[in-house]
Image (cartoon, rainbow, N blue to C red; front, top):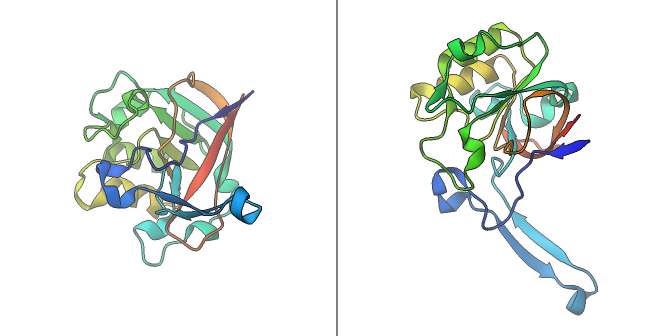
Length: 203
């Protein structure tokens, strides 16, 4: 069974902090009737929809998305249900979970049940990021367009990306039961700080 956990990219999709400058623009440049084929011009930010952050997002000498090894983006994956949390994910919330070296960890939270951007979304705090780094996970994902919310100095991003742990933001986990899967979540091959991605789980 293949489960698509990506958000559709469209002009009416939710965007970070409802900021219109982040809204994608999809315009037709050719039509079947007039040109014999359809073609669309896409203007997107690198952090549009379901996307992966690379170390270069916060580190000048960090690897860009095209420089990370491809094996970072697929493998054994665990989805944890943390929908009981109202504000943030801390190390205390993770210590009883089965998180092992090399796992790709996805957090399903209350964020999954909102179609719009929620300014009070459940986020991953510094202590949780430190814990995940200590467990040597391969990649971390969350079901909102950001992994942290108003943390001074972007501590969560810097801890994870500083350890070359890519971050998937903007996942759609609403209908995904917790459990073990195989994930495939490959970014575009672009020299950038992040890239939209198509994320799927295989059960």
